Image 1 (cartoon, helix red, strand yellow):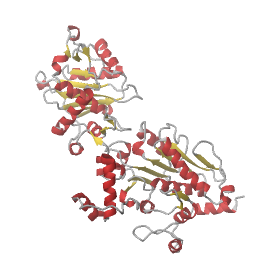
Image 2 (cartoon, helix red, strand yellow):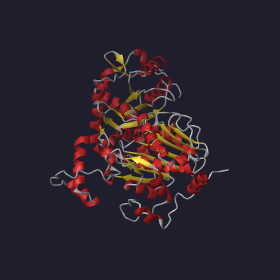
Image 3 (cartoon, helix red, strand yellow):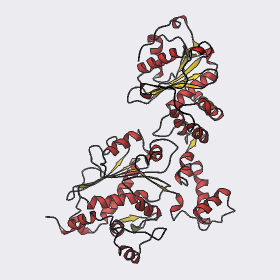
Length: 531
């Protein structure tokens, strides 16, 4: 027989979204803080969150959970599928944790999972949830909500057959084998490994009537979270954007604010910012510099474009993406895209170069890429991208090189490139391989890498019409300078198309004809092995 407390909790679980007429004045009398519009309609979830759940504020004080502006707005517009783009430390993670915790303790058979981007964040998140539990009335904790724990960062409520878990995105088994009623993915833009694959696995565990919240600060115009935000509407997600000035503490009252810049005046006119908020804005811009727009977002579009110090000119990339069109021919389920095939009339008049980034090889390795460019202009003609072993990549590249009239092939010889070159020489007898200092292949080193990347950046800025691949341009968006001055893709994104194109263009610049390998053994016209 169910206890009275458990019956009460189950009844509450069916009425969490109820808005009693007398609830608002009662809450106001108890010290409830309304939303900024003064027209909030609190639900029983709001009331019991305020009455039962405790948090620690930024000063370390323990307080009842009362929503701030961003939390009010999230509750007002929340749907079954939600994606939140936000400035840092607006309390969204805490609010979602509270929402899901109430679901878990009032609805039987509920599994709630929050996924943090790293272990430290997961442990902090679990401390928030533990604080909710530990500050519940003792009577509930000893009876209806008596707990057990099977694993670290897991709370099980046996009488409800419910559980609450906090996982990390670095764990490939996160959420595996569960039916997840409530899923919160935190800081998705900073997830390690393959964020898209991890997210797809988690989402597959959520039934249609479950609730999903994807949330993050921005991190570059690309990657898993960026793609989810861009395609939110077609996937049925409610978009929520919360700028930094929605946090009441982001002010510097004592600061003397000099005359406003044109940009600052526009922010004041559009969003009603006050001098103390402008003073705070100047402080974070001085401290964070180029990272300020991603840590303290102001605009749902520009915060992505401003994230990180992109090697390539983002406005040029965006403009080119809007106009580059579709390939003339697509082969092998989109792995090979062709814009300009070697027209018979041009044979003998034109020549081509193929830059090859072999990557990690295999179905589970990194992508491998080959870029075909026209030698005199540098124009992109074709692009091969996929998971290939060294043997498979050599087959594809040899076939592509022969199709483009014995094109000069420049394979990056680092790591797996040696195996690709061996197959091209010994099995395919390819006659035109790039050679430098009597070594076949292109060597990417600390000296050559900056030169080839900067050369491609200049070409893209000066002549964007030479490039046609959306895959290449999208990789350019997320190819950034890091704190150690290195240039590479941000975590969770790829740079294979960028590197293959950079190799092709730097070989062209170096007058590659003087470095090609042309021994008599390679002049044989051996048919390419079929892929």
